Amino acid sequence: MVAAAVFVLDRVTKSIVAAQVPYGSEVSVIDHVVGITNVHNSGAAFGIAPAGAGLFLVASVAVAIGLAVYVFRTTGNELMYGVLGLIMGGTIGNGYERLVNGTVTDFINFHFWPVFNVADSAVSIGVVLMIAGYVIRRPTA
Image 1: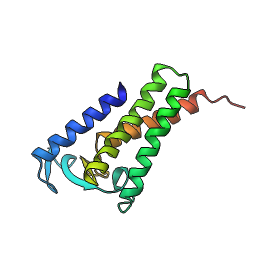
Image 2 (image 1 turned 60 degrees about the vertical axis):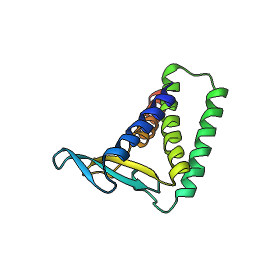
Image 3 (image 1 turned 90 degrees about the vertical axis):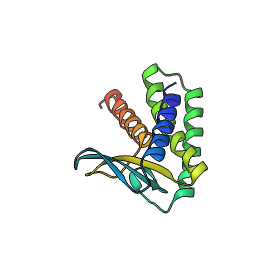
Image 4 (image 1 turned 180 degrees about the horizontal axis):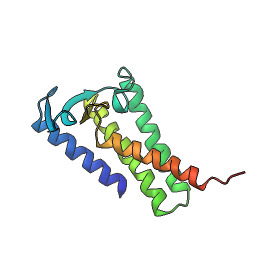
């Protein structure tokens, strides 16, 4: 359910931005701090490796398949499934857009950070929570 919610939220926000904000322009939300900027990214999250669009599409498919296999083979709790759902939803959201458009729409623009989107946020938060969970559970020697 988390993955589906992230995917839908990602698609809706990208569609709104594409319809309301001309490509390459910005709508200020908080002057000089936050804006909605319509840009296309052919690379990874936050504009990393812009020339690797095909590679990132393949990586998205591999991650989605790997996560699905892991979830079906592993007994976990709701928190673990929620964290994995964040990663899965974000991966599928950006993967879908790469498959359909060849690029990903990024729009959340904190002027001190690269422009990103809901899917990037979900993956990043999911990975941080997964690492934090591992560190917290890890037995000390």
